[in-house]
Image (cartoon, rainbow, N blue to C red; front, side):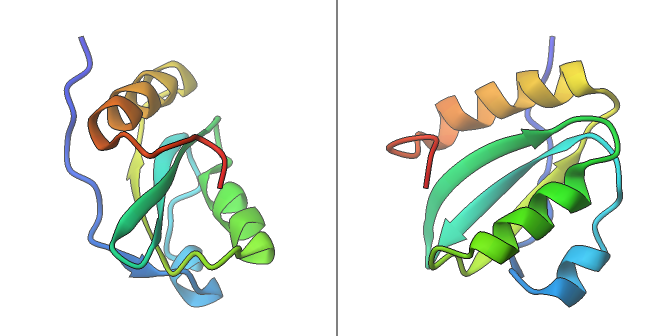
Length: 93
């Protein structure tokens, strides 16, 4: 059973902050102001890469949070749990 753990504090969506993210599996939540707009997961070694892709597409996203996971399988389970918990209106931005 996967339990929801702690996410990082909200970080501004900048290249500098993304460089601090570990390059492993995990989930990320994108925020527009105070609202959660997107919950996504990244497979092995791609968490930093996925956030860089989001930075390039920006779409008025102001900040992000992330949580590393021990495997791609765990990341996908966490993604679903956080999506259910936060209930963003849709998965796509």
